[in-house]
Every structure is written in C-alpha cells, then in structure tokens.
Length: 446
Image (cartoon, rainbow, N blue to C red; front, top):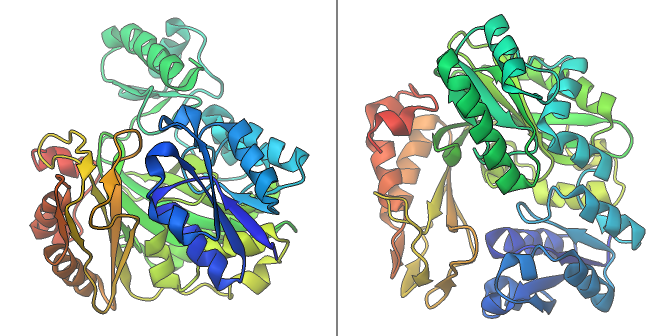
C-alpha cells in the first residue's frame, strides 16, 4: 500500500479520499488554491500545499503546480477525485513518467473513453449494445443528413470529446439539421477545444441507467450493480437511486456478465461508470464510460457495502479484485442521493457566498458528504455542489421517507440551495411510484 497520497481536488470528494486513506493508514497531502485556504480538506489532510490562485486554470487544473506539489511532498500516488484532471490522459501519463501512481484507469483507457465516438465503437466491438448512428465523427452536414435519413428522425448530435450536455443538439426535422450541426460543432470547439461531433438515434423518453464497475491490473472486472440517474436538468443529474426502478436481479446479473467480459477485453482497471439510455421497451443502449469515481458513488456503497474509494486505492496498489470486492456482489435495500447545490431552486442561478449556519441531518440510514461548515464560503470559481445527502433503507419507500426526514432537518443559511426542489420532487406521485424518465423535471414545470 502507498505511504502518502496527494489529492488533486477540493471539496467533499477531497474529504472522501482523506477518509479512505485514513482507513488504510495512508498519509494524505491536500492541494489548495488561495481561495480554499480555509477549506476542510486543507485542515484534515496530514499536509497541505498551496498550488495557485483561485481560478481553477491557475490551480486545480495546473499540471505543473500539482506535480511540483507531489514532488515537494514526496508522495507515492495521486488521487484525482472527479472533475478537474480526473479524466486527463496526459496528466495520468505525466504521473507515470514522474514515478507517481495515478489512482485511476490507465492513460490509454482514459484517452479511449474520452473520445465518445471511439468509446462507442469500442463498446460495440465488445458486445455492448449501442444506438444506431455514425461510427466516426461527422465531416459535413450532408454526411449527417445521410445518417439521419438512414436511421430516421429524431436524431441527436453529440460532441465527440463532450460531457455535461455541451455540444449536444436534438434534431427533429431535416430543415434544422445543418444549423444544429454548425451549432454543436461551435459549442464543442468552445467547450472542449475539439469540434468533432457524431450522430445517434434520439430516444424520446429515455431513462438514464448506469453501472458501477471496478477492474484490476490482472484483466478482471466486475459490475457492482446499477444506478438510476434519470432526474436531471439540462443533462445535469440532480438525484440518483440504487438499484434502478424495476431492474430485477436477473437483468442485473445479465448486464454484469456483459460488462465484465467487455471491460476485461479492453483491459480496463480501477473505477468507472458505464452509462446507458433505456428506451420505453426496456432496451439499454451505451452512452459513455466515465473513467473515474462518480459524484453519486455513495448510493452504490450504501446498497453493496463496498467502499469504492478504498477499493480504488487498493486496486491502484496492485491488489487483485477478488481480495478487494467480495464475490458475488449483493444489493441490499435501496438508496437515494440528493445533490444539494448552491443555487436558486427556481432560476438555478449560482448562489455563492458565506454560509452563516449549517446543521447537517443525521439519524439511522442517513449519510452526508460535504466540506461545508458554519462560516465557510461557497466560492464562485468552482462547481456549486455543497453537500450530498444519501438515505438508505430496507425498501424504496423507507429510503424515500428517510430522505424526506433528512432534507427537512438540514439547515443551510446564508445562501440559496436546491433543498426545496428536492423536497418538491420527493412529494410527487410520479416519483413515489417510480414513474419517471429524463423529462421529469421539464414536465414538473421547472
């Protein structure tokens, strides 16, 4: 096992890595921007190094600054968390060149999965079902029109290097195709520095189902079950559940076998999430593989009892999968996670500022992941996530009731948050009955 790990991130995920390292007796090094000098991850880690100014481009995204901090602190490994450099293949390569273990997939796997068109092709070759569409990035509107005519409208244009809903355009009429193509390319270029887009059949009322996977360095991979992530706004997840509604044990085992075989074939290691769309007939179609730990990993931890971040550390240190994850993986009960964001619940505008008072909920079946505290400041430079509240129960109704209790007992004064939105979601009959898809928020009138 490693002696010292640098955490190339901030906020709740940095604290989560600190906790996993402490469980393993591993020392930690926090990095921080000047704006985060008073953050909890700085005080909770064994050591801390300032790496630059508040803008992430000058701190958390600065590879030279992070590598310099790693060398100063003499660390064995770097955990990237999620976001920032977590899926940067070049950063992972530099870590290796400097003799530092990158706690995540190999640079080759990150690069493959970072290109959505290549990832789609690799998934298809490995036997994972994909939506009909273009095999390579599109070169022109006329090529896009040809695919659209072949598979039928509506279709969706997606940035090859994209994520978070950027560089995406839904096309329902042939007349709109050229304009949508140019808009998607321009947005992709602005957001990711690469304007390539590809085209897929658009599923009108999909559910978003994803599978947590782990792989070791010896060619073995396993699925830890699925999560339902259909409640979204503008392709940004708001609430997640595990297991997915109506997803039985037989289907789970079937997908586990498919994913284990496919990931072993491409030599995937460490943590990842394979994301799918499910159509109204229950068919699953591959979207992408996120080569990192996900924000919503606590719901999987709750229903499986597997510490995913600790597993990442063990797998990166060379432990075989069989010694890290008990087989077979069993799903027990139901878990729900609500992302509490610092934003206006009506307009979704960010709400940075000082938290005057924060009292986290507790009680049986409730977990809170946060770096917030009374007197702390939500910075305007970074993601608006303030806390993740996870409720676990023996059944879905019990998990819902525990989440309602937790949200009602959470106090966060001084900034606006999404708590009232989550409470509204949980009170709807559609949510209580598990009758929802990715249009849920839109149809709720939000």
